[in-house]
Image (cartoon, rainbow, N blue to C red; front, side, top):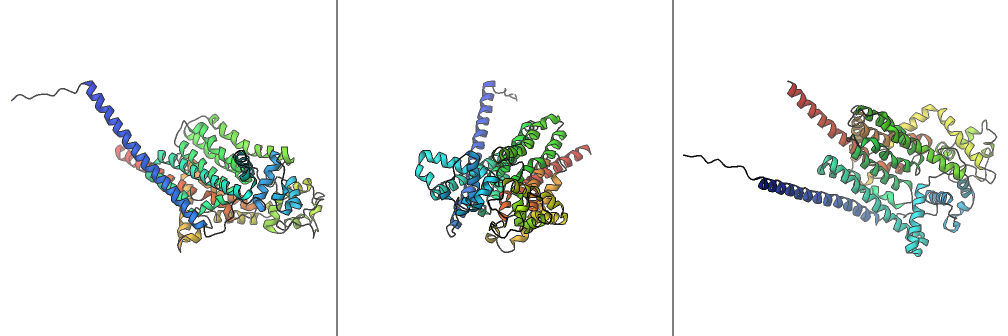
Amino acid sequence: MEVQVLSPAPPIVAFSRLAYARRMKRAIGSRRAVIAWVGAVVLILVSLLTYQSFRQGYNIPVWQVDHFDHADFRYVAEIFWGEPHDLRTYQPDFSEDWGRYLDAVPFRGIGVGTYYLTLRALIGFVNPGVAADPIRLGVFIAWSMKLLLASAYAIFFGVCRRRVGTRLALLCLALLLFPWKTWILIEEMLVEPLVRILFVLAMSVLLSIHESRGRLRLGAALFLFPFLLAAHLKAPWMFYPLLILPAIVLRLHAEKLSLRHALPAVALTLCVPLTLLLVNVLWWQDLTLSPGAGLHAQFKTGEYTSSLCRSPTPLVTVFCNRTTKLNSWWNVYMGPDALPENYRALDRGVLPYILHTPQRMITDAFDGLRVASNVPEGAMDILPYGASLVILLLDISTWILLLVGLFQKETILLSAAGLGLWIIPAIGAIFALYDPRYHRPMAGIPLILAILIAVKLYGIWKKNGKQQKKSL
């Protein structure tokens, strides 16, 4: 019996089959991508709508701008940008002692107020009536913040999905979105909403670059850039790039890249304090990096000014033995004879005062580490009974993984980034009485980084195991 040998398909037929297979693969990939993005959008909407339904039962102020911190941000930004103060839109103390103090000391960063003034100007072109009404303007700005935060979450999901796959990316997104009460950040004219957005964007950049040798060169500086902006929102974040820079240098060295590739990150790290000084010196003639430290020290300890007055310098005597014209909140004298140089002398005394009590400094730092959490305080009331133990275990596990990740070149940047989010608030707790809201911007982020470290370490362990089997 004669066996018939089939000839191979003509090249044109083989090419058509290959092109068809590629088209089918792209179509399946596109369908999966659509399903993944639908899942991500649903998660974001469910989280936001759950918060909105919760919000209906509470009288939550929306972007108040006439008193306390909210008004401070607007007032300081108006000084910086040369905007005239409409004192009718501020509470009376801004026409008196507190207004004089802010004219003398850049007590708040310019970031939040700049965002407010920018949107007010843009809306004024379209609808001057809304721009002139603080309540209506506040509602509009709060929704703009929701849109920005949701967009940051979407960017994070897109980068994470590309790096670690859809399932793990959806898990990471869910950890960012729940508990949903963190949306409360955007309801007030405070630092935390913008800091949260910057953190999420920074982590998106980090996920994009940390495994790429080529992107690491300029990408490291791009990762640090959001923290330059964060420093103009809240001064302690100026230390974050300094904390991360050694990890960047070690990673570049591990990749056998020249250290000159670290120069963009070094330059940006230096730019953070320099830009803060530029703002403070040019507009307030203040050479300190953290103006207002004296008020925070007095508010935290209750006896800072009295300790200075035991052996006062000439510039500090104005604050001694005063019983009138004390600011009702800070308990510091703010009469008309207290001049900018007096307030600066008050600020300069803070560091020696803190270093003189090292035990309290260490205790305060540990308190700052303890208060910070993957699930911030204020979310506990929506979690089931006993959840605090689960959260504590999650936090301890996160710390362990972050510390272990420091010893692998593939995970050192992830580890340093997560630890920095925990350590910077602890440094701030040494100098000021920290409110739990200060820790909310980091919610869920260290846990996500710890999970990605665990996945990476597991992959390295499996790869090493296979290589050992082959060698045997």
